[in-house]
Image (cartoon, rainbow, N blue to C red; front, side):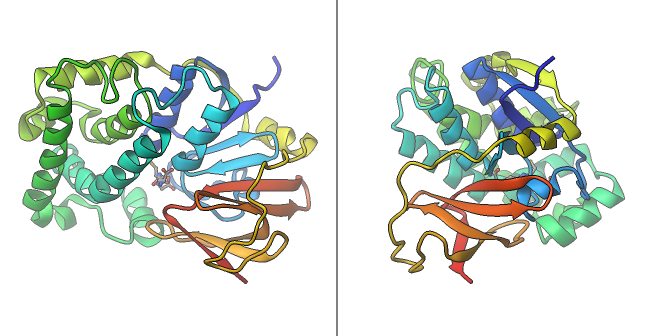
Length: 311
Ligand SMILES: N[C@@H](CCC(=O)N[C@@H](CS)C(=O)NCC(=O)O)C(=O)O
């Protein structure tokens, strides 16, 4: 069987990966599922990402998309129909899910941990040292539970209000980026036997639960298992695609195409990725890396949530 063009590097329990799996389901595209471990090291993914350590990562040949806010817009460009932004303008849906995820992520983890208890010790250690920079054990998070619960409940109430006019999805008649961005955070808290307790705590209304069911039903589309070795082989034989636009001077950092730059997440897992600038505009940045084994790679990042600096 041939390797699908779109590959997703992910692990099952990752909520951000669930957001992308659902987007792939919505697009009904054929995609390759490259399973990686929930805790690094990820030796067969690292050569593609240049140090970026978060999950998920989407690969299309030698083009590597880091962060769901680079992945979803790229999917929309590759497979425009159905659009991921029905009802809401693309920028608005992106902005909503970005702001929501940023504000709620730690609080949502706190709510999950309150009900579901501790993850394995190795997972807790890794997340504290190299991802969240806080201790997400039950004991450490519990004092903040009342604060976390209120924050999450306030967001949930807003989305519940949006659905009271009977619309099936947040943007109207069809699902999109905003729905997926909200869904995966609820999935983080609800996935497991604690779902009922979470629903009660947050006051999830019947329209919200129906909405949740509709998103879950989208499913993951046409998924096929692909080995990490085959994913590396796909990068090795491919050339990065030409990037349209974004080759002017970026005023904020005075960087020009070809300059050595680093791109660093500004929230969690702040590992700088080095490369040479391929394209940049106000919303995205693409850097090129040369890997001794894989050849030329392009890494695509969103601007929001990342800091770009000239070396
Ligand atoms: N803003 C990022 C967040 C991604 C993220 O935080 N992913 C989590 C998994 S759901 C992660 O990378 N955790 C640490 C890890 O898996 O190494 C995105 O939209 O992709």
